[in-house]
Length: 126
Image (cartoon, rainbow, N blue to C red; front, side, top):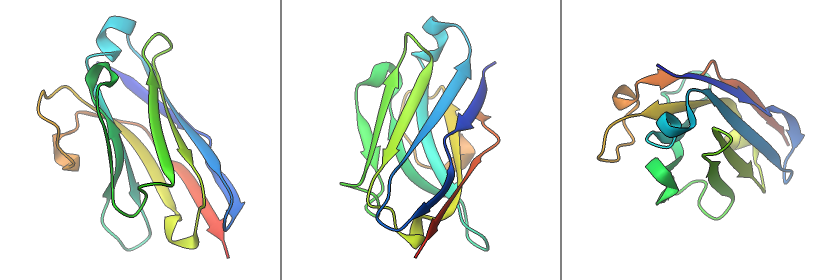
């Protein structure tokens, strides 16, 4: 079992930056075995993949819409995953969720993620 808590959301102007954090309450050894993914959901839209970092931090993945603007990283010693978001636009407005998966094969399907945080709101004004 692991509990995930997101933080760092807020209101920012277009072109601005935010830093989201996902903190996990699990042993350090266990946390490093999870793939951690950020999803987001805007009003009236389906939850969509944003970025992910695989177990042990080996590989990162990004949605095309955020590639080059967002950076995901993890600190397994601190049980934390960080997503730095630059050049934000109103289209990035959504609730952002972090999720953990124990599966060996990487997937962007939300149904394949076992644990979820409560979400943090990101609002980008034009």
